[in-house]
Every structure is written in C-alpha cells, then in structure tokens.
Image (tube, rainbow, N blue to C red; front, side, top):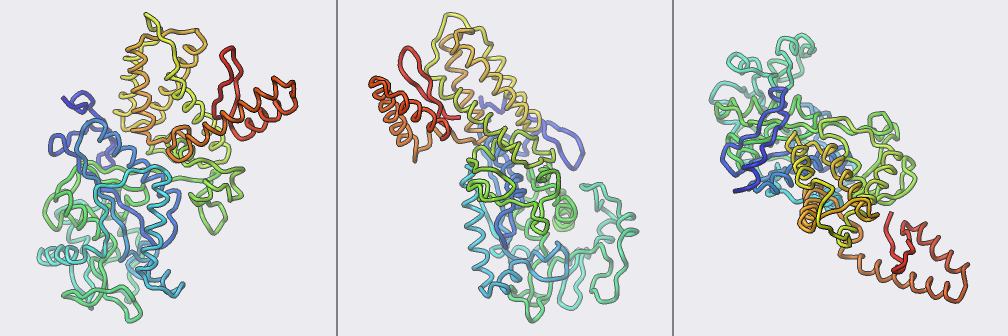
Length: 493
C-alpha cells in the first residue's frame, strides 16, 4: 500500500472556487504542468515564490508514492510586451538593446533561472520544454482550430474567434469574467487592427521586417501567440486531459483562460481537472517594481547587497520565510520578516540536530503518532505549509523539554519523530540544514572544535580575556557555545 492510499488531498480548484478531493486520472500517477519563466531578464522573486510552491507540491506528491510527471516550460519566443498581441517580443527587444542574438539572451537568463532555483534547493521538473522547440506542434493545433471555424486568418496572422467559440462554450469560466462585460469594458478597434473583435487573441502573428525571431508557416513567416505554447507542450507530454495546471495568479486571465479555449476548440474537451494559482509577493506592503526601487533580486538576498535588507540571508531562510504563508495568500516580503524567520529556522535546525543525542525512557509524554498525523492533515488540506510549520515547532518544544528532563520519549517514538522531522522539513518543505551541508559541515565542525580547544587551554591558563573573546566572536558569527559538566558544546543560531 502506498501512502496516497491513506492520505487524500483536498486541493483548491480555481475552476470551481472550492476545495475538492484530488483523484488522479490514472491511479498512482500525477500529471502536472506549470507555466515557466519568460527568459529575457533575471528571474523575479515573485516568480520564485510561485515555482517554490509547486516544488513543494511536487515533493509532497512524490513522498506519498505517486509517479509524477512535472512539466515546467521555458518561454523563449512569442511573448509580446504587456502580454498583448501587438508590440515587440520581450526577448527580441532585449537582444536589440544589448546588440546580441536572441538565443544569447535566452541562454543567459535560462542559466540564471536554473542557478537561482538550485540555490533554493528546487527539484528539477521531469521535463522542461521550450516554446521554440515546439513550433510544429503549435502550427498543427492552429490548423485544426481554423478547420473548425473557430479562428480566422488576416494578412498572414491568425486569431482565435472568442465570440464564435463562446456560442457553444464558456469563455471566462476560469476567471469568472462574463463575455458581455468583457465586450462592454473593451475599447472598440481603431481600424488599424486585423482582429474582428477586441477579445480575440493571436494564435499566429506575421513578423514585421524588423522582427528577429520568425518561423515559416502556411500563413506567413512569423511566430506563435504566447498562449498557444502552453497548450501545445502540456498536451504533448501529459495528454489532452491531465490532472493539474499551475501558475501565478496573474496568469489566470487572459493566459489560462485562453489556454482552456484553445484546447476545447482544438480537441473538444476541457484540458485540466485542477487549476491551481499561487498568489503574489509584495514588498514592504507595496507592489514590487524596479521603477519605484521597491525591488529585490534573489541573489541580493544571499549577498545582502540591497538597501531593503540589513544583512545576507541563507537561501533556506528565505525559502522558510516564503513557506510560512499559504501559497494562495499574498505574502509581504520584509526585512523584519526575514529576521524573524532566520531565528525560527535555526531553532528548528538546532532541535533536529539534537535529536541524535536525546535520552530515551520507557514511556513517552508526547503522542508522536498523533503529532505525525497532524502534519499530514496540514499537507492534505491544500498543502497548508503554515500549519505544518506550526506542528514542527510543537515538536521543537517537545524536543527541548526532553533535553531539559521535563518530558520523556520511548525509543520507537524517538525514531518515528526523527524520521518524520526529516521527511517534513527536508524532503517536503525542501529546507537544507547548514550543519549538514556537504561542502562546509566538516570544515565548520573542525574549526569550531579547534577554537573550543583553544578556549579550554586559555581558561586552564587563566587567560579569561582570550577565553571570553573566542566565545564572544563565535557568538557574533552565529555560533553559540554552551559549557556543561561533560564539556563545551555549540549550536548555530
């Protein structure tokens, strides 16, 4: 029996506006597609939060024993400025400004994207397809939609006919928008557009002479519309009907709404059972924006080189901070919040580190089995990481009481507690314990033990000034010494 047979997850479905019990289309398998980045600049911290949420979800499905195919795309073409059907391709614009090839832009920022996600300890997706690698598939989908009379070609460009589609379908069902309201609130066309109606969106755009990124098609040398790539790639790797489609809240309309319309027009069925959307990240109570200076890049968190923070923070501290909020909640990124999370993070790590040295008893004053179930209950309730973290700190409290002799635990309960703390903290939340980092844990331990020996020698020689200096400077570096009858131990803080 797999864990998923015992643990049934309720997921908030954006399509229905309520939590529903997750039942995969194929038992034991999960197909999940998440809209990836447009690689024309350094990855935005808000995007990192979205991808972190789905990394956590991916991890939990895997922990429960599901075989998961997680597809997260790279948008490397076809995404115009302001998500519109007119204007300049973002990647081509960056290439023009920097006087380099568009694919140099793509390569540079794809590498940056992967480096940042690696720093945050993300698991790689099962497949990471690119828009430019699936031009043929996109053209074939357009042909079918044209044949069904739900799109039209004008001057080499092809547009999806939203009003025609809406005669037999429901455009707006994901975002809750009414087509009549959309028409009423949209300015009429000025005669310069090839569209029949303002609501129509591009499936294929004819490239202007100055447009760098272009491909041949039956209609023109051009490029696909932004929405089309996700329909092509998700269905290619997950099938025409799959379990979960995720992304940021900002993609619900028009991007995901258009995906639904395209897929239904193309193959006659709704593409996805569960639509999931991660909420936005703000900073100091305001929208993040380069133009106002209310902005921070992930690397600046690690280096501390940003006026909005007072120091550098470990990637796992920033990850811990973000997971303390539910993925569907708006999260306010602040220096004070990071400092508080840092304290909590090291308190959690120290408790986990001390599990190995706990003394066992014949009885347990802490019901570990019930506590473990409460952790699963939190994750099964729409991946509620704030409640999970609260449960982890309940365990921290119990661990510290056992260390102080104020509580007891049996050997088998200690094994269950240690195993569960590892699973939920590291495997599911994806945190990394600094004391067990492969690169520096041994070096750190050796250096601290040497300094402890030097301090012991200083105390034996009554050189208390040197002894205190070693203790105080280690404390400033985040390493706290504790003297006991069995010698001196240390913990990170």
